[in-house]
Image (tube, rainbow, N blue to C red; front, side, top):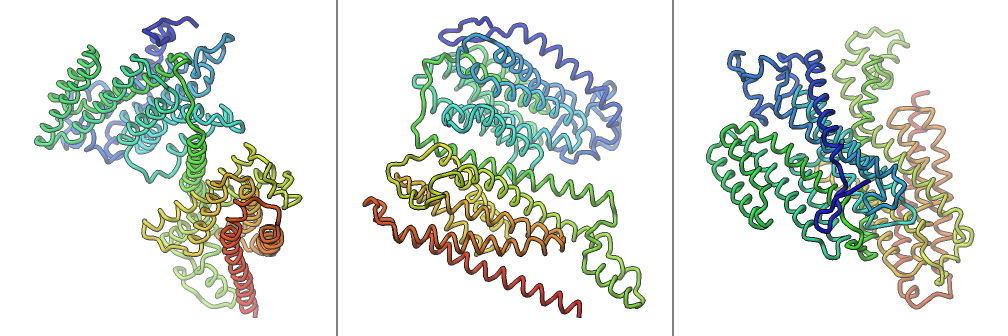
Amino acid sequence: MTSGAVGMIEVPAMEWLFPLAAVVVACLGFLGRSVWTHSCPRDEMVAKYLKHYEYGESDDLLTSEPRQNKWWRSWTPYAQPLNAWSSLAYSFIGIVVLGVSYVDMSSDGEPRNEMAKYPSFGILYGLTNIWLGIASGLFHASLRDYWRAVDAGMTNGVIMAPLFFELFLMIQHSEIGEYWFTALALLLQMSFMYGYMPYGSSDIVLPALVATTWTLGFYSRYSEPLPEMWKLFKQCQWGLFSGFLLRLYDIKRKVPRFLTVLIGVYYGMNLFYFWWSGYQIIYFVPALYGGVVMIFPWVGHSWWHFSTAYALLLWYVLNRSTPDFVWKKPPVADKLGFLFLICIASVNAVRRLCLKQIPLILRSFYNASYPSPIAMVSKDSADASSEQEQGEAVTESKGKPSKDKELKEFENMSFKIHTRIFILLSHCFTVLYGYKIVVSSVWYKDVYQCYDEDAEVTADLQLYYFVSGAFHFEAWIYQAYKLLQGEKPDFKMLVHHAVTNVLIFFSYGTSSVTPKRIGSLVLWLHDVSDLPLATLRLFLAANYDIGVKATYPLVLLMWAYWRLWFFASAVLYSILTVTDVSQLLESVRYPFFFLLGTLWVLHCIWFGLLVRKGLESRKKEGKKQG
């Protein structure tokens, strides 16, 4: 691939891609018109989407007389034609990025820099931008709530490929390669689009994530950033700020006093960036567009599309054109910290996908087979069945639960089920990964090998620690979040996760390999014994009695062996009886034993509760049979 030089930055030749992208985007625009003319008539648009007050371009749809509609209503079915077409700027950028990345992947030559060396990030980035432009365009054309959710999710998730590219270069972990990081970036994108989202507006999240990505890039890789790099950075920064301000101008168009202050801030910042960047002509473009927005406030949102798309392109241009000699690597401690954050974010992404998608799957089953299976296990249905068997006359309202009550019970069961499915999936993953790392190790076969001071912390043990620790730490954060939402806290689980997290950080934070090997055993015995318990709780949430009766004995057996016997006889006993240890280990022996002993006591308490609940359930079942 040929390239042209701009200062010391080598920019790939993309001239042939721009006309191709323009043709594809034009086809998308006309395709959208035919699609939405057929599937979303103009009269239904307001009913499809209720947040019309955020977009001045569709204000006229609120009027009762169609004659007051804007002039373009006579020739286009789009609710917001300018916003819809300007959204395709993302698709234009995506086609260019995808084309360059494809050439990089198929090239046999030596890559000029890291972006060309790892093109999978560019391919994901290009595809994401293409889909963002299409989703945003379809939303503004139709005002359908489905496309609004996809648009917001992709606006939040479009920066995941750049973000994980920066983190991949920072961490360079031997156990996680390029495609693993790309897959994790895709996972987070999917969670933004199809997962539960309790976070803020995409108008704030996207600029924040872009700023974070640039900061990570400059911090982690550029020992002496080139002047051209700083120019691109300033253009990207002002693109985000200007888009956000003119987007806000559209939202606040009916508050004149606020608009006066806002436009003053806008032009003041534009002058500042014009001076700071060495009086570049490009800063006249947002200045002119700002004047248009002052006359027609409803065009402010379209500038958000243009400016943020330009900012997203600048990131790729910078990373695809920067020579290798300005790159550097961060300290090891920072690598490990970012790796742990990635693990936590990935676990949270899976949780949010389960929170949203599993109820939808259950809902589709529920709607397809009404009355649903929950009616068969609800209290009213059980009472009605018992009365009918005894020959008693019951009214129809008492014999069959109402639709609303049944739906409420279904929602409660659905919430429990999707939470239990997430927990079960997490334990399956950690058990399989722990089996690969821990069970095959020398210290699992001989626990006193944990105290071999000459051994080193291997990369796979490090990653297992981070993955298992991420599940526990994310669970702790999630419980804190529910506590802030006003839900009743589970103090036993809060204490359990708190002690576990303290032990994880304590054991990993020491320089010795011993606490890490002991910690891997503790993590393994937790996960392998929690797997049948998670299955039992899922069966309980689904009211599946056969599954409950089959897994309950297995739960008691696994807990008795792993959490009570193995924990005490192998882990705790070895800490007290090992003799040939360093002075460092001797100084932390008893604090370490105390924390692990606290955890073992909690296990004994919970095991007693499991036994008691089983006995109580058996007594209730006997009374019913009697």
